[in-house]
Length: 182
Image (tube, rainbow, N blue to C red):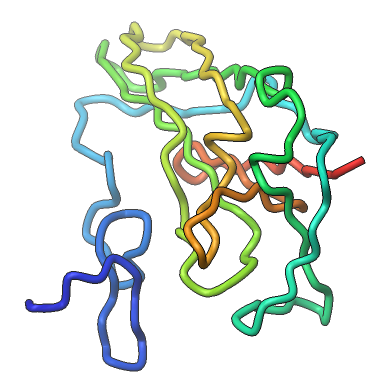
């Protein structure tokens, strides 16, 4: 009760706080609720690769987590040229497959490559409330700014954009976006 850290600490049995860091068993996930109908979310369109101009930095930190003995890289947000030109829309289709009309809150999350310990499990990019008639589909779009929504704070509190595969999440539906530097 006295531990106010956000990040999980398995060594002390502390599961973390908020949807971003909590690693324990969940009854309901963040933003999940009850409805009188059933919705199915799908990605209609989203890019699968982004090429970013900026000064590349290798991630050589003692706290780096390695996967397959590879080291990840990242770009400092301050060094990324034209963040505004990297923005893109994720187009989403929601189908109401239930027998009742209803409203649904579509939430788009991102998950970053694990460069170091303490990276959020996922973070909210944006959301939209959509009303859909029974057995009909509705579309919406959410603007993604990679310099803001796909970046994370490093161990020193500086914003960095990890290179590699980022995952966009709509509930259980996933879409991979690869970020490469040139």
